[in-house]
Length: 126
Image 1 (cartoon, helix red, strand yellow):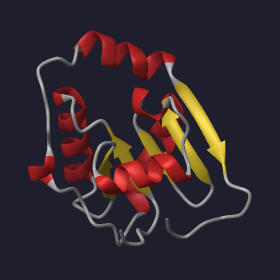
Image 2 (cartoon, rainbow, N blue to C red; image 1 turned 45 degrees about the horizontal axis):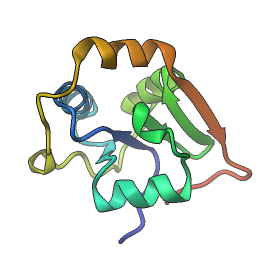
Image 3 (tube, helix red, strand yellow; image 1 turned 90 degrees about the vertical axis):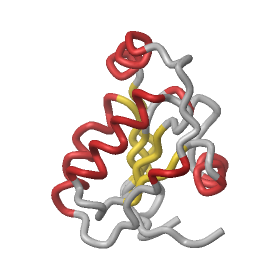
């Protein structure tokens, strides 16, 4: 376990569509944004420390102001892609994708799911 600088994008690393989305974000950010799978050891630690039980239903962007999930994460994600300088990128070989992910269900969840968890004080890392 190690400290990760913010912002971080957290995504479902068992879903092929979600993995493709994360790879696209990684390419757009040129590897400057830290991208972590929900089911990696780091992802589990982040979920336990910051997020709630419904965290795996959507992707998250966690920055110094708070955690943004689903629809609420889109603008913080764009801001992070454009401004982040020192992220770790994405490890592409960790994917545990399966064909069980429904494209329509995941696309629908992006529209219907939205959550913001503000921090009491600004954070620099997790």
